[in-house]
Amino acid sequence: MGKSSLDHLDSEEIINAIKDGKRKKIKQYPQHVCRASEIGHDCERYLVLSITRWGDKKPHGAETEFMFEGGRVVEDLAIKDFEDAGFKVFRPEPDKAIMAAKPTITGHVDIRVDFGNSKVYTGEIKGLNMYDWNSLNCIEDFFNSKKVWIRKYPAQLMTYLHIKKEEEGFFYLKSVPRFQPKLIWIELDHAYMDSILKKTERIEKHVADGTLPLPINDASVCQYCGFLHICLPEIKQKELEFIDDPDFETKLIRRDEIASLKKEYDLLDKEIKNYCKDKDRLMVGDFLITGSEVSRKGYVVADTTYWKTKISRLMGGKENK
Amino acid sequence: MEENNINEESIPAVLGSDNLVRMAEFAEKRIEAMKRIKTAALRVTSQHDWIDQNGKPYLQVSGSEKVARLFGISWRIDEPQLTTEEDGHFSYTYKGYFTLGSATIEAIGSRGSKDLFFSRAHQKDIPPSEIDRNDIKKAAYTNLLGNGITRMLGLRNLTWEEVKSAGIDQGKVSKVDYGKTEMSEEGKDLRKKIGDMLLEMAGNNKAEAAKLLLVYTTFIDKKGKTVKGKSTLADISEKAMPVTYGKVTKVYEEWKKDKKEEEKIKKEFEKEEQEKLL
Image (cartoon, rainbow over all chains, first blue to last red; front, side, top):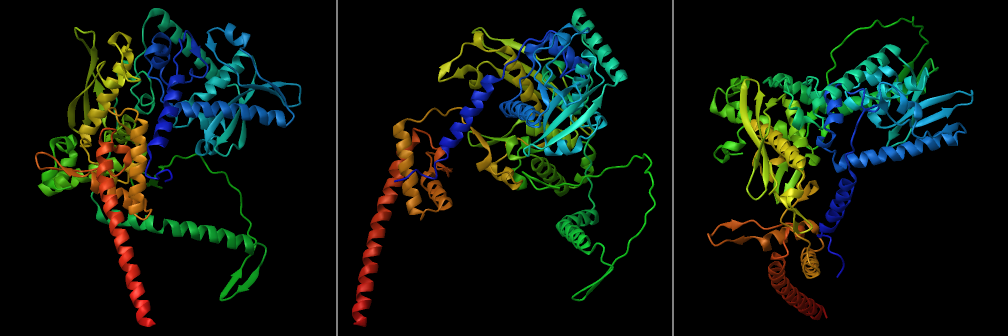
């Protein structure tokens, strides 16, 4: 008799053992000063608690640890990318300049590269999911990200640039899982860096005085915070509106039904028009296709604000966007 | 869900007095609104937000927070209370106030050092002095959030059928069975034999084999109540394994006997048919 295919127990036990193994690796370490990787965090109370009550921080789960480990692998891959390209790569050891800086912000520079112009640039490597990787293209994209951790990245890199007295550095982003590279140059924004230094001084003062800044009460930030259980912020959120409108609902259902057809139409239309490019008249079966070159006057689109609507059909377990 | 099946815990607290009550002017509409809230809430979750805890669906706090964000539930929480017992065991209790619209409810979240999750490891008891107070405190806070949010939306005491209706596959959900210990080699051997017999009877169809297992493990208890059986071998305990093995073996042997008989009759029939042709 072979192994029973009804027997699911073993695979589950193995995965649980793997997750337990990862959990054992999650350790909390004392923190005495601000960290470059955290200093861009929106909540100063969080930054003070990270120093004064680091042991109370709720540790991340095994699932997050898998991602962190993946990130470390991406870092090695990224360094190899630069080396394979023939650039001179410096893998910085703990930096004396960083340790001596005042106010004190510690950190570990990922990479320094000489691209051939005899100047060495400081870089910060990040492994990102495809969505984030696609959406980050300039410094403003980092600041405008909805994700708390992405908003922290500029402060991290700029802190290194400030300490090393450099005006330019770069983010090297690798997509996960496709591992594609993207490089974004960053200029040191002195005004922003000044705000970070002042923030660091405020934090140092709170730590020295044994005081705490006020909570920020921002659900979008607090939801990821490991100090929620001792900070106890009041979380205020805008309630979801339920409406009863059968006509509107019918339109949404129909819109959902024809969404795949529209996608197919757009793809076909693009393919056909690419084929017909530079052909002024074409006859295919019953179809007459004509074309001509059109000149369009260029213009600049003025800055504006608009309401972005996202419609998702809740399918349970998975979302149909 | 039938109206008479609704227990207090499964009624969204939000339906008490806020703007959603506009939808509940009539009793039927109230039930309808309740269903909508529960369905919408469940559909926002994914299989990763659920745990199969001793056979019951349990929404993890990640799922509760996701649902809270969608519905816009607000909350404030009091400082926790620490209770220490004479034997050194201790517990933390948080009290919170959860609001949606104009409805506010109070909820309690509590965890103690006696919880098996903290007090036992590798089949050994851990003394309370060695249990990290912070771990208990954090767990109590998490428990409060889960309680408050799920009570507000009526997501408590759900059945797998209800959860399944929102597209969550029980089979893909992680399982936690605190009472489960490592199965002995004998137990594993019996489990394998049971699996093989069931598969053979089901013509190598796994779904059919699971149905057979459910039938053979369903029984009537002393009070005359039907106790639903198990449809996967992983859910059968070490203790129940020999009983299940006995039942399945009995059925299997009868099935084999019948099958032999059937084949014998079939062969005789074919022989007779051939003789007629000759």
